[in-house]
Image 1 (cartoon, rainbow over the protein chains, first blue to last red):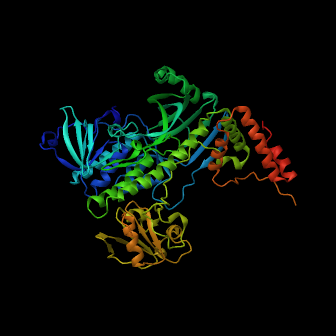
Image 2 (image 1 turned 30 degrees about the vertical axis):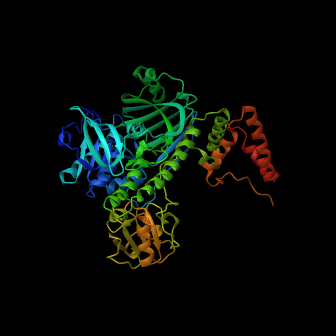
Image 3 (image 1 turned 90 degrees about the vertical axis):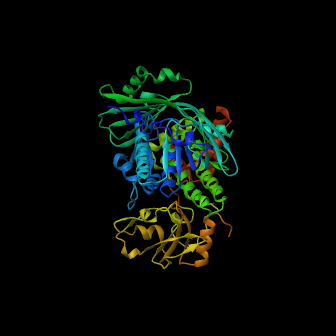
Length: 537
Length: 65
């Protein structure tokens, strides 16, 4: 059977733009058809903005790569119209176990809070993730949305100007010129786009190698995340076992720095390592093997005039904590509505600088967490290892040491506390919904809150009055009126009211809270909208 | 009245503390790190003061198995 990642999903087809003279001007050109590029294109296209993805390849990700997707990115995908297929296919998990040497030292339960449409985490191979995004892009294309994926199109030159970007794109039929009003570079950690602009990418290199193996096996391991520090089968190193769909298991084995990568990747060397871990009697088949090293680093700025960087091209983290693809999806979630308002002339171009501010804040949080996990998992000095091992020893017997065990701090969405787009908090409400926060989901009627918020500025009133026809500087503000008494669960009231009797929230198109007040105060909310679109108030 | 040894999580933002602890050791030789740890535990022991708590801590820190 041909695997999905061996099938060209967007093969090269000659496009009329290739023979156009003068070069055609497109609205937004997205470089890279990975998860982030596809999400950006879908987000723009379903709001009517032309998005052309160019990618030098024609297939989805080879091998499983990113496998762990968190709740907030799933909610973003739901807004993009493809959250459900991900969750239907994905493996939902809540339990993790940590082993040290031969002993289990403790286990944890993510204890997902009730009253959310999506689970805390799913595991899903990146190739499925991309396939479902490609399917969604095709669906939009058939409905007449302005979206295109051009496979076999490699950007070889990029020249930014004040009001557009010139691109030279190589194809099997030779190069052609294309212009773009805006470019979003989602071309991965090695980003050729970043290199073409001569921009640096500074951070910390971790001198370690990890072997990833995807194995297909009928094993009765439970659907849990198992992490080993210094296990007997990989002395002095770490190991991870995690379940994916289709009976595929992800195994990560730390190998150390001084190894021969080509040798280690050979099946005759990989298989004995896996047998040592799984036992001689477990039958398995290797689907994919890779060796990775990693760095924690980011660009100094994600916006360079009309070129915007998103995902791994802008920031890179270690894999511990699943903060790579998950944070990239939050980048485009943050960027697309801002770009749309700027392109429509409804917001000043400076609104895009808030993409820099907010997502650099997010990237720094991710880099900090993933660097700390890496320092714990791969201690680089004798004392660092002694302290780490002491934490693990103590964690077996004493509860206090367990929060110090760091096998990855799992991705949670960031709250933009310092953002210039926030207004002063005028509600003595729950901290989790203060301005800057991503809206927590809650059951509403037969469905969920986030589905009703969608992707437009919204006044959310709960047990309070607000107008249906509020408009600020040409932006129509949707009104969602809810009554906590109508709800079967108290989740909405607990998450948005706390001890308050009523509240009005201004929600951004990316479902972050911009402002909140005890009641609808017209001046407060009009200024809050202006502030949230980058205008000075 | 003497208190008891607290073995429940008690440090807010434990990751920040652990990062500070590692940072304090950065650039030190093993001998310097060992000496640092010795000073640190004496400072913390003095802060605790309570002999019963210290006795329980000495016991809790013994290697198990």
